[in-house]
Image (cartoon, rainbow, N blue to C red; front, side):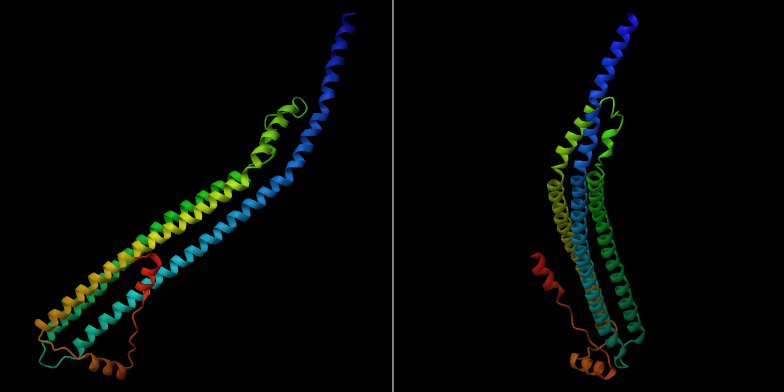
Length: 272
């Protein structure tokens, strides 16, 4: 009799377990139903982040183009200014103090070297600041990419037994399904904001760079003025008329580059 009771209990238990097997199959069916949505999220996230990377790349290209335009312009202007002083030194009458003129030449060279150091400082600071901002931008994108694409489906099986308690897995899948419905909208808003912030930050870096370069240029011009003043007052030099200078340069084949209008362009762009 006792053996019969035990057998009956085991039979009832096995029947209950057997009755739960359809839920195990439901787990797999639910998983398969979620797979297309998971793929859709993956595609959406990758496409959204790719668009953001392309937008940031375009902004970075404009930033580098502008920075180089400013540097090229100021370097060209500096060379032209130096050439004017050197031209004056080289074409002085014999009455001028030659050793004194050599000091002016050295002074002019020093002014150029100092200007070059100033320009280097400006572009280095701009580059370092840009690197920090770009790294922050891509780190944020990579974090979200891993969160959204890495959400996975298979982790619902972690520490779960599909035969013993499939209901727990189904509960996890239900929660995951609800969360998946919210993913695309949130990431699109985030990424749009990141790109806008990066663009605004780069505009600020450009303005800082232009101000730095302009200050360096102004110090250079002050140095050139001091060199000219010493040349005239100390060395007994005479000023060569601009017309004569232009004629001699034309004869020598020297080309005078026109000054760039980049200041006007950037004033209009940034409202300076």
